[in-house]
Image (cartoon, rainbow, N blue to C red; front, side, top):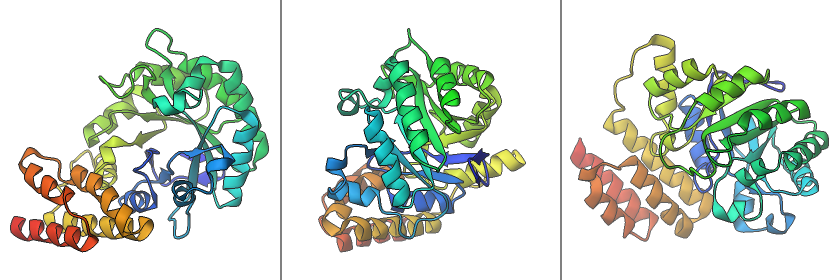
Amino acid sequence: MQIGPYQLSNQLIVAPMAGVTDQAFRNLCLRYGAALAVSEMLSSNPEVWDSDKSRQRMTHSGEEGVRSVQIAGADPELMANAAKFNVEQGAHIIDINMGCPAKKVNKKFAGSALMQSPDLVKDILQAVVSAVDAPVTLKIRTGWEPEHRNGVEIAKIAEDCGIVSLAVHGRTRKCMYKGFAEYDTIKAIKQNVSIPVVANGDIDSPEKAKFVLDYTGADALMIGRGAQGRPWIFKEILHYLETGKKLAPIKADEQRTVMLEHLNKLYNLYGEYKGVRFARKHVGWYLNHEEQRQFRADFNRLETAAQQHSLVECYFDELV
């Protein structure tokens, strides 16, 4: 799949997820085969760019592969300025968020709320595309609510405005993350535009990945929650798409190595205090089975990096 001048090595992209797809997580997914990893959403409001959260999200030092940065907002001028700023900071691709369903984003008429206003969508897309030489991509949902799925309309506007690739989550804003993703709208979008279309939503296994590609005709897949606690899902999917066969489950020793590396990267990125707290949710995803409940409870009570590291080591020692 081609995004502007960038030829991706395969069809798998890491979805941007606030509080999840930081540099530590993105690099793990890239190592396991993802062709592109989109950064966490950044506000177009320059007043928050100096916050610790924004500075960490803007960090690209040591970033592997093509750097795609997602921006969010509802003001065309601010969005254009944010795009220029992030390109100056090292972004290769600018991605525009019109898919986030969160209330705190939508109440500012940003994210998926923008799908209610095609005219404003057009103004924002034109402003951002005109502001930067870098390729601009867009992420949307199928519509605002099930009764008003206007994904095809928004997709056509995007193509006309110069968007080079479009990712579509198979739910409306009203659906949030409930129920099941629907792929008919994504299929219809693919049939109505000539730019690459990326299918997103509920892709959590190699078999599901192949089904969604075949059913929608999409050019690529974007995987979000399916990769939480499982960055190796990209390797599993690639193997299945290439061979039709499933890889053997990841071995305990490899999982231990990945988890400990991930924790260390979190401590380095956020400092020990915040890193310990970010580690809790990631370990909860890595070890999310019912029989691991007590381990998770014990882990979540720990307050230092050394304690967390030691408990993970002990868990895998006993497992092996």
